[in-house]
Image (cartoon, rainbow, N blue to C red):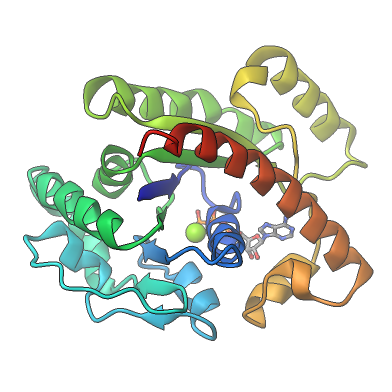
Length: 253
Ligand SMILES: Nc1ncnc2c1ncn2[C@@H]1O[C@H](COP(=O)(O)OP(=O)(O)OP(=O)(O)O)[C@@H](O)[C@H]1O
Ligand SMILES: [Mg+2]
């Protein structure tokens, strides 16, 4: 039904972590989920290894003409990142026509296709933005990360204007938030002042239980530890905002 790109050209801000948790959150609602990993580092593919079901087609196949013949399983299905994904950047941009067509076909089979993108401004990120209904941008509140936000927004709104007017920006989701850092608190305040309409007002704190949960193949809200429960609540608060936004927009679909 809908595809959601998780994008920010800045590395390490939590794209894969949030993408995997969003997939787990939506699958708990009995939705049919496909997870597409466009990053040859394959961090998300590795996190999902214990719980998800890999499809026969791999990520680089999506950039070629395909006869999509897939049946949704009861688990989260995954189109895994393969090493050829690193070469996609050298493909002719015409491959995005095939990519968009393939995602459209997959959207007929699944309730949600979640697309995890690599930390580069290139063909794969553009492809994900062209083919998606929604885009979510995890951000970090460190100064060096904030510098990239304008570029990221220009890319997203540039693609929306030129190639995909239907694209809905779900917002920037602050991640790895440290409430004890004065700089981060000030940055958050300045973002609220300047970009409140583009910001999801539910930051996710920095907690070691988050990487721990992924190494176990569990969402953090299923880990039995106080810190994990707090992290879980923060994820759920952010995801409920996204659920509402998507429900509102999916009404016509
Ligand atoms: N809220 C958090 N608290 C603690 N650690 C986190 C949090 N979010 C992400 N991490 C950790 O930070 C690292 C980077 O996260 P992740 O891989 O999700 O980022 P990314 O944006 O996908 O990176 P890349 O750009 O390289 O694909 C990982 O080790 C992850 O486990
Ligand atoms: Mg990643």
